Length: 129
Image (cartoon, rainbow, N blue to C red):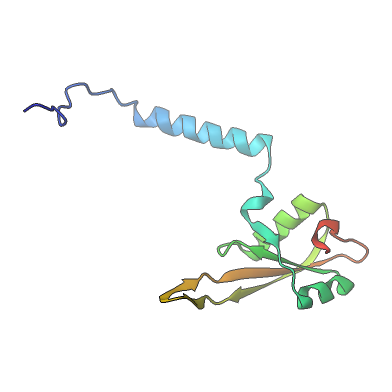
């Protein structure tokens, strides 16, 4: 055999499982103590439409969020990210849409919207157009 591709004579020793788990849990604990989880993991972007801009008058802001995010996660992300008080969070799941480009057909993935109502007198300046 000219090429010895399958020779595994040099094996690296594996660290014990308990040591690996201890290092991983210590790293996770240290990360959670030093900085809060970034809000970008839950909130994706502002969702701007005619209907969402009408919501600014009644202190409602619309965000596109992660499909797996819960209402409490969305509330925490908005409160941490923008330093505001959230009164209510309503969510809407929009279905996937079929798209065609020439002879190729596919789907455009659905999204999840969150309509966040803030306390009176507070606003998010970045979300307004």
